[in-house]
Image (cartoon, rainbow, N blue to C red; front, side, top):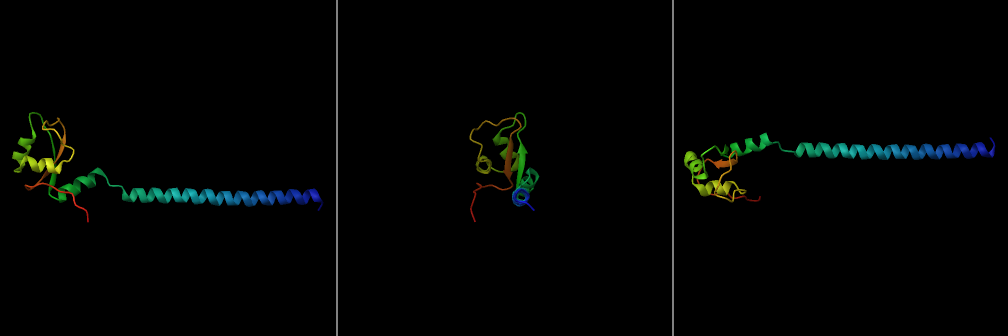
Length: 116
C-alpha cells in the first residue's frame, strides 16, 4: 500500500470509531430519556386516583349548584362551614361559584395537613 492509501484508511477508521462513539452516545441519551419518561409516568397520579383517595378518606366531592351556598352544603352533609373551609384551602370568599368543586368531609372538624 502506498502512503496515500494508508492515510485514507486511517481517516476512514477514525471516522468509523467516531461514528460508533456518537451512535453509542445518542443511544445512551435516548435510553436515558425513555427511562425518565417511565419514571414520570409511574409517578403520575390521575384525577380519578385523586378522587378515589379523597373518597376512601371519607371526603366526597360536591359541585356547587344554582341557589346553593356553603351553608346549605354544610347543612346537607351534616357538618359545619368551618369544616368545608378547612378541607378546601383555595376557598377564601363566602360567595360560591356555580360549578365549583368542594371537598366535603364525612365528619365535623377542621382538616389539617400533616407531614410524616
